[in-house]
Amino acid sequence: MPVADTETEVLIVGGGPVGLTARALLERWGVRVLLVEKHRELSPFPRSRLVNVRSMEIFRRLGLAAGITAAAFAPEYGRIRFRDTLSDRDFATAAMVGVNAPVQESPVIGTVTSQDRLEPILLAAADAQVRFGSELTGLAEETDGVVALLVDRHSGDETRVRTRYVLAADGANSTVRELLGIGTTGPGALGDVTTVVFDADLDRWCARRPAGVYFTAHGSFLPLYPEGGWAWFAPTPEDPAHADWPGLVSRALGPGAEVRVEVLRVQHWVMNAFVAERFRHGRILLAGDAAHAIPIIGGLGMNAGVADVHNLCWKLAGVLHGWAGPGLLETYGTERQPVAHRTLRQAVANTQLLLHVQERRRDRLRTGEAASARVELPWSEAYFAQLGLVLGVAYDSDAVLATDDTAPEPSDSGTDYVPTTEPGHRMPHLWLTPDTSTLDTFGEWFTLLTPDPAHWERQAATTSWPLRIETLPYEHIAFCGLSPHGALLIRPDGHIGARWRDRPPSDDTLRHALGTITRSMPE
Image 1: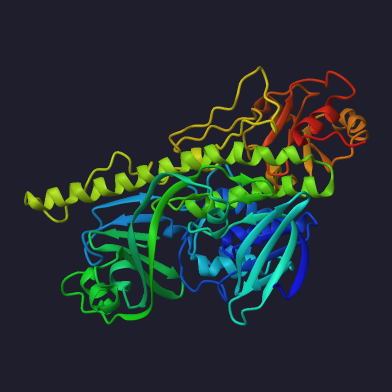
Image 2: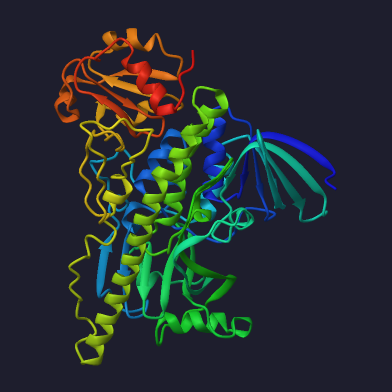
C-alpha cells in the first residue's frame, strides 16, 4: 500500500525539456505543479541540439532566452555540412534558417545548443516541486481528478498522488501512453542508433568551417559545447557490448586522421517516427515525444513538444482557475495533432533528402569524379528553411473564431512563411516601439491589439477573463487588415483568437468572443 498521499493540481510526468517548460509555464499561471522524473538526475547526454526560433520566442516570454543563448554556439554554427569523412572538405552545405542569422519575422533567433545545457536553465526557471528517481506505475481516473501511483526507485517507497490533471511528457516509450492503451500511427521504429560522447582535437578540420552538424558517410559529428566536446551519431553495430568505440570513431574521422579519441559516454537508442492516435484521455494529456516521436533530422521534435505545452498550459490554467470550461481542453488535440502529422512528414522528408545527397555523392565517387567536386543541391537553402512549419502554424478549432467562414490554411511544405493576421495563425512580429515587439505583449492573459484602445476598454470592463489592451500603431493597421477602430484578440499562446476589422458589432462582442473561445461564460 502507498505510504503517503500528496495532492496537486497538475502532475507532470517526465523531466525533459517539454515537462520542464510546462512546469515553468504553469507556475507563471499560478497552478500548483508536481513534476516527477524516473531518472535520478537530468540526462547527461546532449540529445536534442536545436532550439528553433519559435521555441526561443516562448523562452523569451519566460525570461530565459538570454541565458540559453549565452550557453549556446554562435550563429555561424547554424549550418550543416556534408563530407565524405570529417577530415575531407565539404561537398555540400545548407544554412539553418532562423538560426544562422536573424530573420525579420521574429525578434529572436534560434540557436544550436545541447539538451544537457538547456535543461538546467529550464529547471531553474520555476520553484514548483520536482521529484527525481520517482517512477509512475499506475493511474486511476476519478470523477474530479486522477490518482497516480509513484514508486521511489531508490527506496521502493510508494506514494499516491491525487491531481486534477496529468500532463504526460515521458518520452517516446511513454508509460502513461501505454497504461492508457493509446496506439500510434506512422512508420514506427526507423532503426537503432548509438551516440558516442568523446573528446578530441578536431579544430584542424572544423574551426574554420563551423557547423552544428557534419553529416558524413560514416556517421554524424556534432560539436557539443562552445568550449569543446563532440558527439558521434551512427547506426548501432551488431555487438555493441564489445564494440571498440574509440576505434570506430577514429575510423569515421577518415584515413590518416591520427587523432586521440577519449570516449566519455555511450548511449543506445531507437529512432522512432509516430504520432499518438489521440492526445487526450479524460484528464490525462500527452505532450512531446509521448504524443509524437519525430526523427532527429531537421531538429523538429523537441521544439514541437515545447509548442505543445505552450498551447496546453494556458488552457489547463483557465479550467483550473474557473474562467474556462473543461471543453477548452478538447481543442488541444484538435489543434496540435495535425501539426504533429505535418512535422513528422517534414522530418521524414528531411531524412529522405539526406539519404539522397549521400547517394549522389557515392555515385560521383564510383564514377571517378574528383573528390572535391561539389554536389549541387536544389534544396540546399530549403533543407532547414522551416519557417512555414515553425512560425506558420495555424489552428482550426472551437478556440478560434474564424472570419468569412474560412478555416486557416497552413503551408504543408514547411518552407515558406507568409505573415498573416487571419484568426488561428500566430500573431506576426511587428515592432510597437524600437524595443517592443507585438510578441512581448502576450503572456498570462489575453491581449487585445487595437488602434482605438479607449473604445474597446469599455467592452473590456464588462469581462472577467485575464485581458490586457495594447495600442497598435496606425502604421500597422493596413497589414493587420483593420480600420482605425478594429481589433485583434490574441490568445495567451500568441495565436489570434478573433479579428474585428471595424468597430465591435455590439456592446457584448468582446465578452461573447472570450466566452466562446474559452468555452465558458462566467458572471
